[in-house]
Length: 198
Image (tube, rainbow, N blue to C red; front, side, top):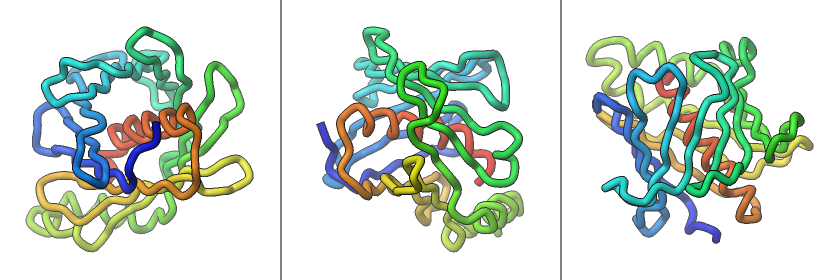
């Protein structure tokens, strides 16, 4: 089932445990995520409701606290759906993630930061008291999801906001249901991992 794009992501930065809600263009909630704090091995549950009574997907790291961990996706029944992996040391300068279909070792898609300078400036200015409150209005990083041939399929862009992170997800081409699901789960995990970098 395809969603009504663009999707809007709202990320509560000041909450003790990071919380994220994703709504479609009409404002209907699609996913709700609340990350558990102080876990050695990252585990995220994606719910279909804010009350967290309808678990839809699980995202779990394949190892304990590792910069290059692979995060595997499964539905509520435990059926594997693929995974996403940050490209280790390469991602220190420019964020890049590989999206995998099933257990395949070659990525089916990649997520790449489009402008490193914008993210670096945003991350630095956010650390300065008062100035950081307004930096998000002017500096908004974006990330492109692309196929191996370079064709862009989705884009996630940070939006101007105070006291929370706001992002917009645009679909650039038609996608099948499973590919769309893998991409959205990858963007959820990427946003959780990248939040401290702006």
